[in-house]
Length: 121
Image 1 (cartoon, one colour):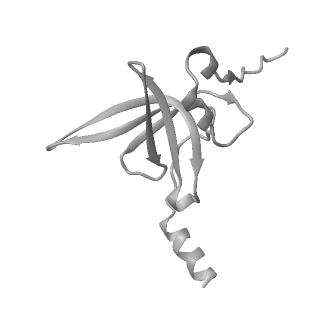
Image 2: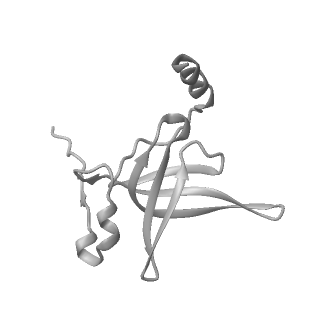
Image 3: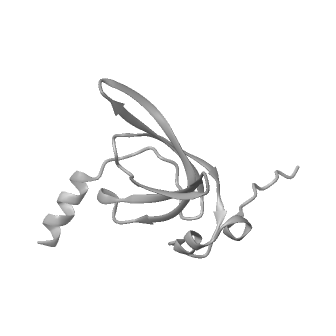
């Protein structure tokens, strides 16, 4: 039974060309919106507060503050509506799920940023 489930999961898993990111990173998700017979791309930029599930059903949650209100959106990784994902900042966190960010505002909600290494010559 387990072999059959593994086979089905491999068939459902689609290869996506998104960059590697984890909880604590700041990303911009470009996703397609259909309005009638027209299609446009909208951007959702924010902090990744979690990644979950196996490759076939993987998803990630992005949180941002819009007009003083916290907005979260869950994106399936293999969604055909996601055009691309840009990695803006790499954060340094020690947890896989950053639910505590929901209760913090202002400077308390900051995530330390990983700085790029300088090339030595």
